Amino acid sequence: MIRAVWARPARAPYRVRTGKVATMFKLIPTVRGGAVNSLITSKKYATVEEARDATKALTHENARVTRVMIVDVANGSKFVEWIERS
Image 1 (cartoon, rainbow, N blue to C red):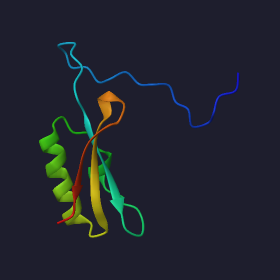
Image 2: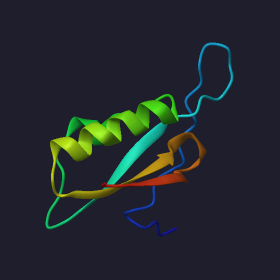
Image 3: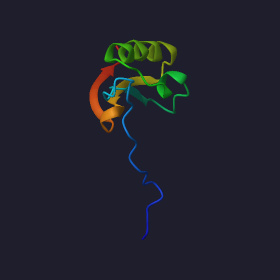
Image 4: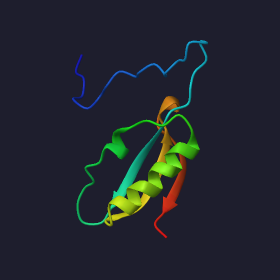
């Protein structure tokens, strides 16, 4: 059996002590002319509001960030919303 190098086994969603699946959000920035090296992009957020606040901090911290996508990591990186620089 040949397996592609980039194929990874699916991870189980994060579960809180109650046994319910928790929603975790992550930021994916779109950058003009390079990449962003910030802890804000590698962190996972428990609520959309926390992710939005982190997006504001990221765009203020780095002028090259043009927009940020928020994805739901617990549901297979499902798209949530785009936030544009204003």
